[in-house]
Image (cartoon, rainbow, N blue to C red; front, side):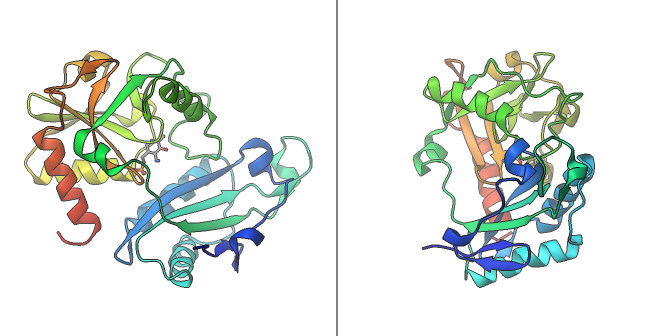
Length: 287
Ligand code: PMP
C-alpha cells in the first residue's frame, strides 16, 4: 500500500512526493521534525508534538509557514486521506531551497511534509523478552553545541551511536552525555527502577524531552510509584532492578541487559510490565 504524502498543502503519490535537492534540509540537515502515532483513529498527544515542533523550529530560527492549529489539522487530514487509523506520522519542516552555502537567510519556502505509514520498530518478541543494549562510545551532542532538546533533521549523532549498537548486535545503544552521565538511547528515553522507585535522566542531562517519557511519568505517579528525574550514571543502570525505554515508535520496551550485565533478574520486571499495559490502555483510549 502506497500512502499519499502531504507537501505544502497538497497530497502526492509516494513516487511523486519530491522536494528540491537544494533544500537545506537535505544539504545541511537544516530542519526539524516529529514522529507521531495514531491509535484507533486518534492521534496521541498531537498538541504536544506540534508544540515541540514549534519549539524546535523557534530554537533554530525557522518560521513554520502554518499556525499550530493548521499544522495539527494537516496531520489529521493526511491521515484521513490515507484512511489510516493506526499509523506512524512523520511531520517534517525543512529550511527550504536555497543557494549552496549555509546561510539560512538565502533560502525560501520551508517545506512542510507529512508522511503517514505503518511502523514496526522492534519484533514483538523483544517486547516480551526485553532488549540487550550496549553503551556507545559516541557521546550525546553537547547541549552547548546542538541541544538534544531540538528535534532536528540532523540525527548523525544518534546514527553513529546506532551503528555502534548494531555492530555489537544490539538494536539500541545507550548514549552518555559529555559528562559521562546517562543521557538516553539513540531514539528512546531510558528509565530504571531502583528500590521500587522510577528514575530517569533529567532534561538537563542533555536529552530529548520525550512525549512518551512524560506520559509514562504521569502513569507511574498515578500508580503511586515515585518518579525521580536526576543525573544518572551507568552504575545506576547496571544495578537497576528493572530498565525500560520509551519512545513514540518503541512505546515502552523492557531492557534486560546492558554492556553484558543482566539487569535485575534478566527478564522484564513487574513495574515495566504494568507501565507497558497502562501505556497501551492510554494510547488506545481504553483507560
Ligand atoms: N530521544 C530521542 C533522541 C528521540 O529521537 C526520541 C524520539 N524517537 C525520543 C527520545 C523519544 O521521544 P518521544 O517519546 O517524544 O517519541
